[in-house]
Length: 462
Image (cartoon, rainbow, N blue to C red; front, top):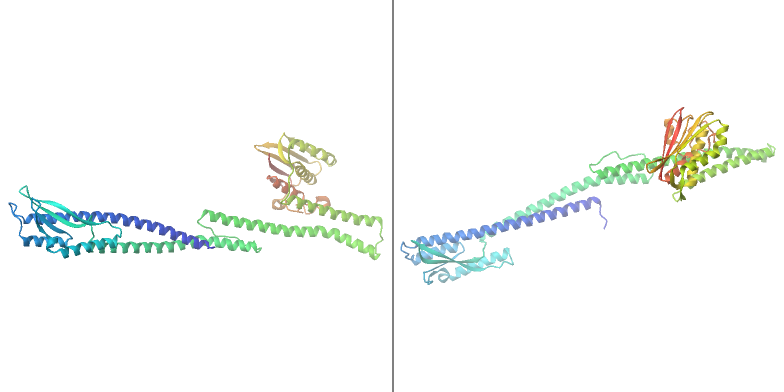
C-alpha cells in the first residue's frame, strides 16, 4: 500500500511516541507498584505492632490477663484493620481467639481481601498467614499474641481505590501524550513534506518543458536544501540545452539555406533557359553540393562524438611524440603565413584514444592559425602535472570577448561573426574538442584577452 510521506512520518511519530509513552508508563507503574507494596507491608507491620501494644497495655503489672470483654474489644479493633487476634499463655494454651467467637465475620474479611487481590492481580499467590509476638511485663514473657491476616500483604478498600485512581491517571496521561505526539507528528510531517511537494511540482513543470521558474525557498534541512539546489541546477541545464538546441537548429537552417538557395536559383535558371548550361555553372553547382556534403559530414561528426555509446579505443602513448607528429603536418602552412610555432613538451605517457587526441590537437592548432595574424606566435606545451597530463595551445591572435566565452563550445558558433564558413571554418571544431575531452573525463579551460590572444588548457587523466 502506497502512503504519502506526510502519513508515513505522522505514523512514525505516533508509533515512536506510543512505544516511549507505553514504556514510560509501564516502568513508572512498576516502580510505583513496588514502592506501594513496600509501603503496604511496612504499614502492616506497624498495624501489628500497634495491636500488640494495645493488648500488652491491658495486661496487669504482674501479668494478669485482661477480661474477656476487653479482649473482645481489642479483637474488633484488630478486625477493623484486617487482623484476626489470638492470645495464648506461656504454655501455648489459647486464652482468646476472635475467629472462634465470630468465625463468619473473620471468614468474610479474609474472602474480601482475597477477592480484592485477585481482582488487581489475577495470578497473585496469597494465603492466610500468622505472626507471633511476645507480651512482656517487667521483663518477663506473660503471653503470646498471634495476629492472622491475608499475606504476604493485602490491599484494603482504600488501597484498591487508590490504585484505580492511579491507573486512571496513568491512562489519561498516556492518551494525552499520544494526542500531543500525533499533533506534533502531523505538524513536523507537514513541515517536512511541504518543501518536497514543492520540489515535486517543480519537477513536473520541468517535465512539461517549463524551465524558466526556480525554487526560491530554503529549508532547515541540509538534504532538502541540496535537493532544491539540484533541481534548480537541473532546470538551468535543461534550459541551456533547450536554448542550445533551438540555436543549433537555427544555425543549421541558416548554414543550409545559402547553398540550397544558390543551387535552386542556378538550376531553375538553366532549366528555364535563362542561363546557358555550361561546365563552369555545373562546376559551381557541384561546389555547392560539396559544401552541403561537408556540412553534413560535420554534423555527423558531432553526433558520433557526442553519442552516449561512443567507444574510445584507448592505448598507452607519449603525448610529447603525438604533438611533434601533428606539428610536422602544419609546418608548410605555418611557413606560408610566417607564423612562429614554439613547442615545449616533456615526455608524458597517457592512456587515451590516440586518434581522438590527434583530432583535438589538430582542431586547436587550426583555430590558432586561423585567428593569428601574419608574423604572430603560437605555442604548444605538453607536460605532466601530478597524476594528470596537461596540454596548452596558446596564440597571440585577436582573442575572444568575455561575453563570447560561454558560447564558444556550442555547435556552429564562431566568435568572429565576420568570418564565413570558407574563412572561419564550420564552427564545430571547439564543440568536437570539448566532446572528446569530456569523453576522456578531462577538463578544458580558456584563458583569453581581447587583442592579445588565447590559451586553451586541456587536462586529461594519465
